[in-house]
Length: 465
Image 1 (cartoon, rainbow, N blue to C red):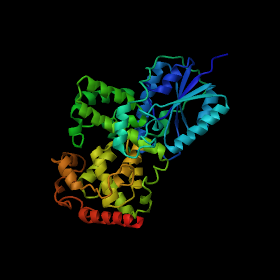
Image 2: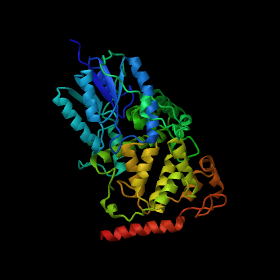
Image 3: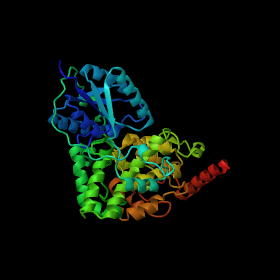
Image 4: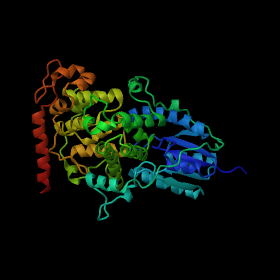
């Protein structure tokens, strides 16, 4: 009788290196097959921009797996039903995957594991996407962290809870009695219209590209990271976030390589640790997501459930289209649409403008970013929006309102970023209210809208008493 195969289930871990569950499947001694399921259901089904990046990443992954002798099955449908059907069709005796941490995924994975166990299938899971599991790091009183700085200090002192997984080796392919779907049939690449046409100029997806991006950053930009990361016209950041979001590189790989660069003297420790603190923010976001299952839809600070948000679809539409008349806001929103990405400093500016100057719900912005970012991430996206809105853990105080004019003057002093993405507004960057010569009139007065936001916040505080 032929030996029953092992099945590895790819999720947001689309890589062959430092992939603990994949390494375990290869090390099981069984012939191996891999599976990726496209499931359109649930809050965290990939958005439009990320689908484009996923298409490219999966195509690159197929080539990697082929070289290892591992066939990749592509299936669409509900995860539980599709996985069980695939296990039965392949005749798999064991299934391996890396864990997920959003509440809907945790519950789904529990149900899937129970169904497979009932069928007599061995299920083995690993941590493949975090430096430490959310339950492996806690305050001195053994409670989850709610503030980033002590979380980061603790994580930095503890370090990762695992070492890099062994590299993949060629293995025996599992014979398949089931056909794979075609990646091109999933419609991940837009055509009518092709709104992602510029993405190809901005991104190269896949595991090799992710590792190239890490090397380039550590060699060329990490040494001045803290100084240059806030200037959107410059290429001062790592641009690794899309790869982290789909898992074509692991945070442990980044952590390990950055530490090696620091120890070799190639990157100053202050700059290196500033960069690693951004990786730690991602960890913190997952820590919050796991310990606060309601976080994707509800404010972490319950008092904000009663906040008096406005309901202006017209203002929201203007924000999404980059037609607010505020230069750096419009440049950021147009960069997002054209490239599937936005510089982090500008993300904070456009988010503050939406939730404070326009007084529109953070959930609207979070959902728009989910659909338009190639690096959309279940934890990072939600935690960062709540941070800006003032309703999250370790949040910026609600009364901290970014002034988009002074932010542009400080971080885009020559107007290079604005000229690139909103050239029609490049000459209007002056004055506290924003001049309008040759451009759109601002849809809101910055000073008056700031006062309105502060009043709404004070009213919320008064209601608490």
